[in-house]
Image (cartoon, rainbow, N blue to C red; front, side):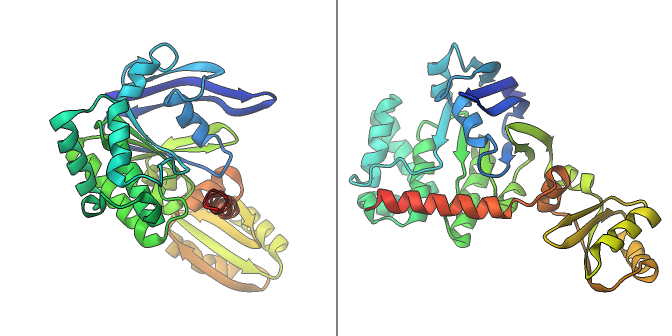
Length: 323
C-alpha cells in the first residue's frame, strides 16, 4: 500500500525550476530516501508534501489526502523535522513538546503518556526540565525527532536529520529511526547527501537538478554500476582510458584524476588489465560498488564537494543564530 503518491510534481521560483516533474510512490512502513547534492530539490519536495509550499504543477497525496485541497488533513497525518532547528531554546524540552501538543490537540493523559514515551525513545526523559539552550547539537536533533513523533504520525519527514552532527550521534539517530520503523511501522521519508545514511533506506530516489534520475533499493542501484569497480591511477590517463575502452569495450569515467571502470567478475578482469594495458599504472584497486559510485555513474561527478559546502553553510547559519 502506498502512503505517498506523487505525479509530475513541479515547483518554480521565478525563472528557477527547483523541482521538475518528479513522480514516485512511498510504501507504508518503509524508509524512503532522497539522495542528492545541496540544491537538488530535496527539501523543496518535502516542503510541498508537508503543505508548506504550494506546487506549481503536478499532484500528490499523503495518507490519501491531496496536498492542495486537504492541507489540514495532511498536516494531521505527518511529523516534520526541519533541516534547521526550530526549537525555542529559551524553553525546556518538556515545554517545547507541550506547545507542540496543544497545536495538535494532544491533551491530558494522552499528552503525558506520549511525552514520556517519545522522550524515553530518544533518551532525553531525564533531561526534560533542562533549558534547550544548554543542549548539545545532537540532543537538540533528538528532541526535534521526539517532537515530530508526539502525535505518532503516519509519515515522519526528516530533512537532513543528521546534518552537522558527529559520527557517533548520527549512529544514535539512526538507531531511533530503525526503532520507529520496527516498533510502530512508521513510514520514514528523509533527505540526505550522506552516502552512509542512504544505505539505511529500503529505497532511494537519486535526485539531481530537480529531476529523479534513479529510484530503487541500494543494492539494485549498485548493481547498475557493475558487480565491482576498478580504480586506476596513471601518468598517462588519456592513453589508458582509450586502451580500456577499445580493447575491453568498457565505459571509463574519469574523476579527480582517477579512472573508474565498472565490471563484472573483477577478480578475473584485474589480471588481464595489468597484463594487457599500456602505460605506467601507479596504482590499481578493486572494490565493490558504493552509492557514491552510483552517483558518479548517474551524474558524472562526486557529491563530496557539495556535501562539504552544505555542511559549512549549515554551521554558518547556526553560528549567526547563536550570536
